[in-house]
Image 1: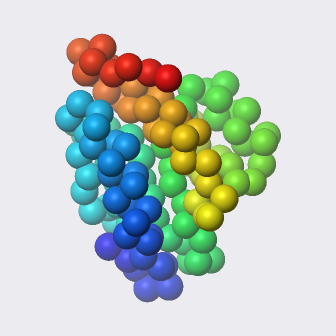
Image 2 (image 1 turned 180 degrees about the horizontal axis):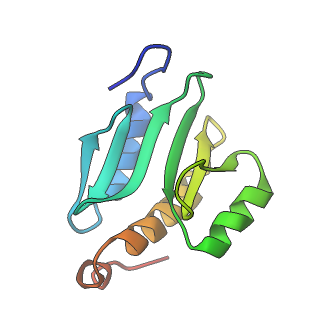
Length: 123
């Protein structure tokens, strides 16, 4: 779903993200208020969307020290204005999808119940 002045995330990126996240136990894709999100239970693992500035972003969860570290790294990383454990990344043609896959797996492991996390092999 897109809102006025917010571009739709390229379908190939949504499919690529879905292939990473759908491989995790009980992680499902759904439409968000804008863009697409993946959840385990009622917990959001990742949310990808187009911004009013025409850039594409994905947000996901991280440990508090990781959030601070990524915030200090600067672009393409940013700290979300909501949630103390949310990391943001601007997606573009330079995105390191291998690193993103690891970050999304970590996000899942923070959000999922322990019984599901036990089924995940982490990099």
